[in-house]
Image 1 (cartoon, rainbow, N blue to C red):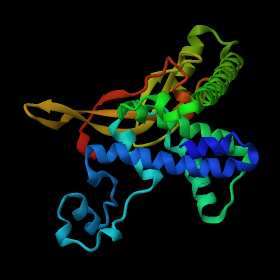
Image 2 (cartoon, rainbow, N blue to C red):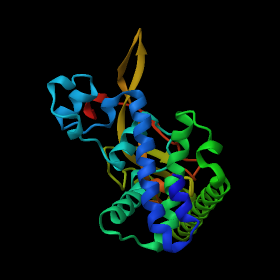
Image 3 (cartoon, rainbow, N blue to C red):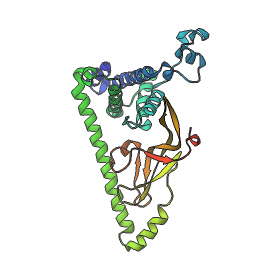
Length: 281
């Protein structure tokens, strides 16, 4: 990562190299966390010889040099699954980093106008992984710690401003739509238009809108919940966890994607739902 930061401070003409090095360093750090749990977590699950090597059965496999490991996005997805609600970056946030990394690595092309945004996304992804690996930020970032802090703080500030702007716009639209109605008339209309989700993913759940107070909908991926059963961790047979990716409210038009959800404190970071987990596994 030092190579990435060193390139970044050289100015825009070196930002393409900064993003490339940051992407590589992030991928290695994610894989370091996964390997610490089990080596099999970084290999391509569809490549059987790689799985054999990772599980200590390499004598039955081809050469170790032929092992296939996962890339940056898959490493992120696996870490995010193991560290629910600890990673502040969504898959959508990560994709520009992966694209930029591959663009530089494969064809020496990267849009410099996006470099600071992509670079800072990388820093924010690294921070919680450092904590899990018990690595001191001051040691990892070295002389670039202050730069790291300023870049992260500025990106978070911009996202908070964007989130607040969405709320203001939604409240204004709600007033335009329903401000002239009586409370009784408004309640009837709202009950009709908010009864069903306007977005669809693997699962949706009703949540109070942080802008207008009407019923909105959180949509995302439903995941199994693991509970302790004696000496083993088993799947809870009656409950799943909704990992939210998007929020939408038909009443005021508020739509919030994964990047800004974290900045709307009234919205839950996740929801436990009564459901058969085998419908989602």
